[in-house]
Image 1 (cartoon, helix red, strand yellow):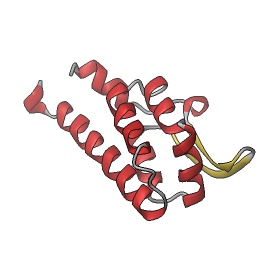
Image 2 (image 1 turned 60 degrees about the horizontal axis):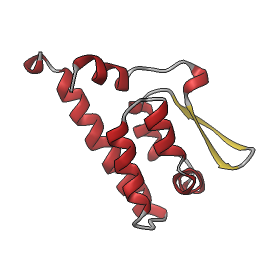
Image 3 (image 1 turned 90 degrees about the horizontal axis):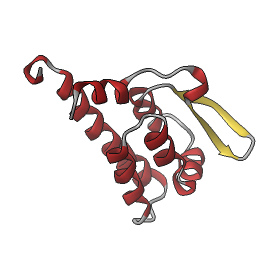
Length: 114
């Protein structure tokens, strides 16, 4: 993966491009994520109802693909939908998927890859 692509995926976004967490249409949780790192951290913090709401609407993979521009992670998140996860299992699998990708991307920016 090109360094520019990795940097773009890991960048901090302007507020209008952030992911805003809701528990249902019109019910904002007060939480948002402006980067992949923030998104990863928020997975363990936001209300479970919010995670399930966005997960099954396809909001996460849409934001990851269209805003963060990480098609690979978007596909991995989409694959999780087929497992019909809920509750703590959903939180754990989603966090594990995102954190593995984040760790990989960070490793691509380390000096040994330049």
